[in-house]
Length: 266
DNA sequence: ATGGTTGGGGTCCAA
Image (cartoon, rainbow, N blue to C red; front, side):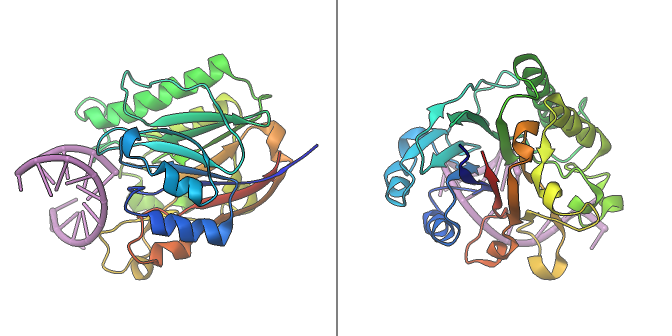
């Protein structure tokens, strides 16, 4: 028996500030599963009841004060998945869930600071070390035959047309060759398919984030595709549709990231 | 040319 599933990855940049935005998005798109990053609140302050009232009573979340925080919010019952701390830090960057034989991993990979050097920049070392550990974990504990979905703000735009300027961005954290190599290693660990690129040719520009610092985000259009939904090989044949809801960057008081939406049969 | 803005928590850090 197959079931249609609509899953979303969205860096919300404060779940409490953007409850009305979340409600509007859920009303417009009706996902089955909403995965959030940068919820920026401790678990005791997570707006569980407000989100349950929107039709998403099944929730698994991890938060700390001020920074990071991830959540998996669902219409359908979830079981807790296998999660752990990465790079020796309990900083709420990963949460996992299981439903209907599929394991869902929601990641918020460290941004990595400004300098693309592991020696001088501890934040960059954290980013690459986090990805290496996660790659090894999937290689050692999971296989390409497992039914898994990995989503999140991975803070890396891997392909030339995932950035507004490949040449300029190749020196900037988020699109440097070493980060792209690390992300490729994570992707290859269980042969994850990059679902948006399954639907959209590599020749076409595709962004999910635009800086707050631009005077006019749409006019400048200096975007990056930092947010991803990956699936393992057994789920590829069921992929139906993918969308990055770019127009939401123009909503009032937006996150700097927009949702990535994928429909698949599981 | 190294700006610019946003969010959380508290008078700065991270993105």
